[in-house]
Amino acid sequence: MAHFSKMPRLSVEEYLDREQRATVRHEYIDGQLFAMTGASEAHNIICGNVFAALHGHLRGSGCRAFMNDMKVKVEAANSFYYPDIMVTCEPYDGESVFKQAPLVLMEVLSPSTRHIDRREKMMAYRQLESLRQYLLVHQNRYRVDSYRKCKDGNWEISTLGRGDSIVFDSFSAALELSLDAVYEGVVIDSFVEESDDDLENYQVN
Image (cartoon, rainbow, N blue to C red):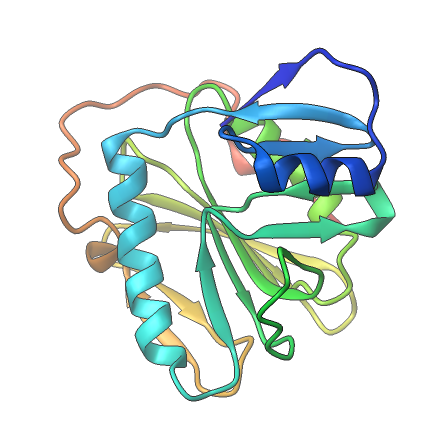
């Protein structure tokens, strides 16, 4: 999750140089920095489960999965973000500190970031021509909101629950990952009502 850090506007070059030396990660939005804070245990377990499945599945394919620490550059929005999970088939570059052509992006929702992940980030991510799938994973219940880009450029939206599976088919060998596998090790012992969290409030075209 990110919090605004009040400081002079920075150029992209200044941000990247500063970020290489920083002890706290920052997302960059049109010259402003937003400090990243720690995540919950459930958040980390979910990310680890998804990353492990993708990493093993993609081995030898030329595509790679990244978790938490690889930035994605959205040039059209003059922004850099740290998605929780990213899949890209860009050529390997051992020096790269960001990617520009992801196929899949995933964010794990928290009470403090769910509106940002659904609105600001979604609007920015939609400007990535390469993006085919955006996933929003809830921590407190078995629910994944899936946004898939269709051939006509529109986005198909679906809600997945317990018993369903996420289908990753943006790369050559598709992967079907059950929500039981996504939430393995996560104790869901409470339900938090999210009054304005319905899909219809976040339609995209």
